[in-house]
Length: 231
Ligand SMILES: C[S@@+](CC[C@H](N)C(=O)[O-])C[C@H]1O[C@@H](n2cnc3c(N)ncnc32)[C@H](O)[C@@H]1O
Image 1 (cartoon, rainbow, N blue to C red):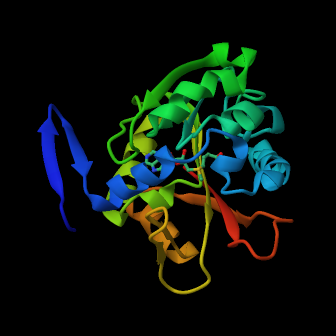
Image 2 (cartoon, helix red, strand yellow):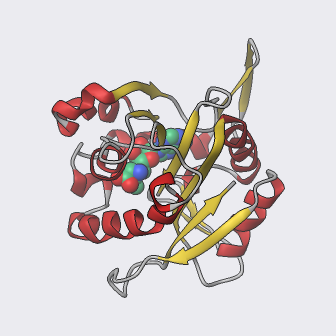
Image 3 (cartoon, protein in one colour):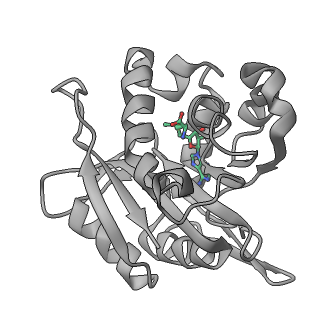
């Protein structure tokens, strides 16, 4: 990897290289709106959120599942689209982790009054973020993991496993390619992985894949989007 520098600060390894700094620069120039979050596809947000709600429902205690509706973490949260529309209506408290400072700064005004139940907004790259041990009933990660290199993704999954509370799950919702191996987009410095590649990283981190399911009713010209429930 070009131009990589690794610094040790306490127990954290801070990863900085061109792959990460290019993505950071890309997002710094994006408007803090739903359209900005979704690359001009704000219109798919309601279908996305309804699909996520239906996916999550069977895992919640109220439906006989193991997930307590207490504390959720939204990863790569942007301005909090998922936090506002999916997580806060279900969970008592939500934490967000997002790398871009201007998205973090705009999140509470986008979310509105319910943002008083957003306890922490961690302004950090996921490659460096360590969720508190055993803290979260749900860890939600959507449309961000293509911004992590494989080895950082596996380590991030391992830290997320450790961050789950008893009965908790992690949900990953990502674009996928039908091809065998990932494609790189140099516009926003991200990979789109195949389902097999994503699942390999999950399994390497020690996760059990409970289910994977395709998001229905998205426009045909978008990448297929899959949701994975992990424990
Ligand atoms: C496509 S947007 C998705 C936002 C949100 N998950 C949603 O679905 O509305 C991608 C987000 O990931 C953030 N991001 C990019 N690289 C990141 C990284 N390494 N760590 C954390 N967040 C990152 C971007 O700043 C942006 O907010």
